[in-house]
Image 1 (cartoon, rainbow, N blue to C red):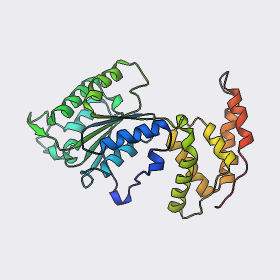
Image 2: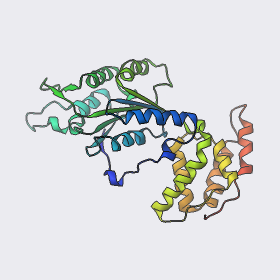
Image 3: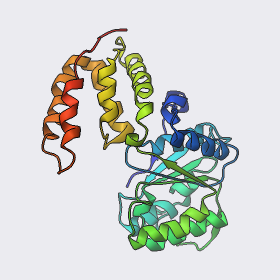
Image 4: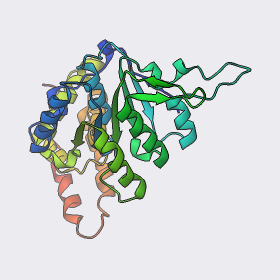
Length: 292
């Protein structure tokens, strides 16, 4: 596993109110909870499906906190076995020949003054979950080699896509340990549950990518927006971002007539009971304007 340091804040894409909040009840609730979490730097647990923007929320919390000038370090808890992940967090045993295992090299020390973002913490080994919960609660960590307890000066932000979706013992254990340790619990709704926000999101993302790629921003026909609102968006915001970027780069007609129709053809063989959804969409795909 590699430790990822955030991009310089001036270059980071800080989400707008349109992206984060929208107008649906679920997003208004998220905004209220997020505003509370911005008042201090206590631990946060973020839950949401893949692609809903958990890391974006973590970066938003960091950027708008008193720790904004410190580092933002990301660790992917699903990338390594438990022992290696523990080494990544707390440090390696010292090698007397190479003098490796410097305490300053571990994220929990490198993140001093900043934010430590644990991605997919729901995939973490049970014992390591317990150790991490103890670290979050105590404000100290112990290096296995020296046995010395050291104070921590980081904000813990943990994210998981699996907390509410499974009854597996490890994830129930996570709820019992890390959720009480987190002073703030943010739940990100999937895009399919916030259909009213999709037109606003499309407009924001088209403008964003138009600036990025120095191209005119297309305007989507209302019938296309209606089709997007009926789409299930299994990849959530990340999938919508990909669509909007491709529309800006390649042109709305080309992208929608080729790529989207291919997906709809695949949906013509859905499970029983969903056929009406697949058959309804092709009638709503035409009528695009390339410019505002």
